[in-house]
Length: 214
Ligand SMILES: N[C@@H](CCC(=O)N[C@@H](CS)C(=O)NCC(=O)O)C(=O)O
Image (cartoon, rainbow, N blue to C red):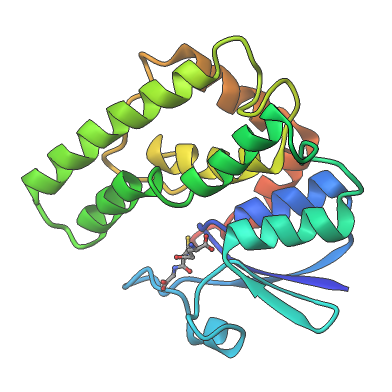
């Protein structure tokens, strides 16, 4: 059976959500962050050389990197779902967002998170992140003009990837004192809300939530 290694408060939410969307049976192994350092525990190094989440084990394969895991699961279990047909405009948009979500879009998010976690003032980094957020949100807002999802009118796995990046930026995936304001982006707010109404997303959110502090 598919085993998903989940780190509470992390990108591995994407993989649990995707497994729920595809109806794949899985075993969920939850790892907890060190409360002081916010780093992953040593148990993840037993699974992957980088000690990071998400990771999956399936049929003797260990797969890491959330985009690659998404591709693997859609390939193995999708039966044509959640990925547009090759050679279409929708597929090109899907491929673009699959890459962009974990590369360009993640840069300001990680700068913001790291300056917060290290309790740095770092005004230049914050200013850089703020400018990048604006560019990023303007781009996503324009993309969502006339469509419900990033590659068209249907959810694709590129939305599974990009949703989490946007939710981090908006401060909802990992609570952060500073986060990018979405007030000027009605399509992005509607997009996030549309996703958060999906039964698979709701189930994954409940399963992935960290245990309540005692
Ligand atoms: N590009 C990788 C990033 C993996 C990554 O950095 N995961 C974070 C969680 S969001 C992690 O495990 N951090 C814990 C640590 O580095 O100690 C992916 O998309 O899977």
